[in-house]
Length: 383
Image 1 (cartoon, rainbow, N blue to C red):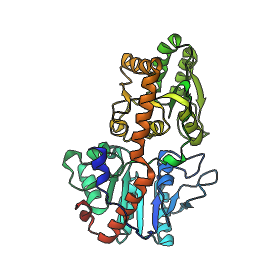
Image 2: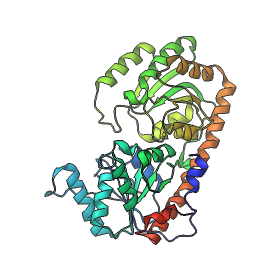
Image 3: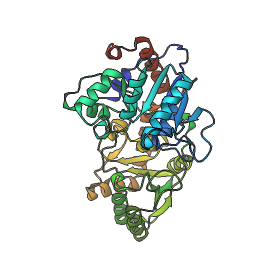
Image 4: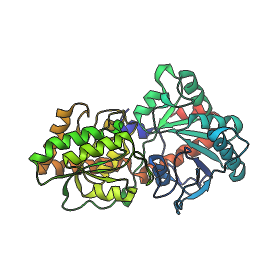
């Protein structure tokens, strides 16, 4: 599915009155500037007037510009997820929303739908639903589509949802990037190749280090840096993969900066000449790639999952398990200033398609349409 057709399925908003939307984060996400993962960052970016976000209580103060309510732990419920589910139900009784939007938890969305069938319900999928509890089988996904509005963040996620003959309408609404809030691209960019993301095998960070080990000796004016840890947040543990990458990075002359808040990551992207997103797994969307383009860096990325839908022709592609191809792509950019400039400009232009200022009204319009036609979710598929 192309970007144009993906966004086109959502009608534009026309001075719609704000709905009382309650947005439910996955229990592991934290709605705070120093703790937010990818989903919490997106929810904060796309929140509209009258919206309240609910989730697990963060350690640090939550975002101050969007209403946030922590999910209470209900002691009589069984298990951590049972307590979270019961706490969300308690907040629905208290907040009395016009619509509930659940992110990335089909099992939680199904439980809410069964308990509150009169409230319009949206399930937003950020990852492959075929690996999620409550969405692994075609029957489970068919039932989800019959009982709630399903939104996928990319055409790739949508195709995974409808695999195995699943019948049901799935709206594609891409992740948004607040271009106005990005740091301005540096007029003269640093000779820096940057990796920013989780330091895990799925993200291809080991391939990045190996490519840098091959390239840095022949590019003495260049540096390479890895920003990230095993997971988001300053309390990320030391893992075997992280320890191995640290050892390899030291030998290759690659600096490891560790976990940094999202704002600092964006600052680094706005100064780096090249950003590499060599994901080994099929990225459902590829927010790091979009952020790199928005910040004006030349992008080298993987052809897996939703990454080509995001980057289009504004990136060089290389499979992380094809080390010569990754080395060649990075070397082309490191050796050619004009090519880096063209690719950076192309990335900035493509990022405009994902501006949250454009996508936010489309989300609000989808919500309003669902409230109008509920409980006939099938009407969302009509032109």
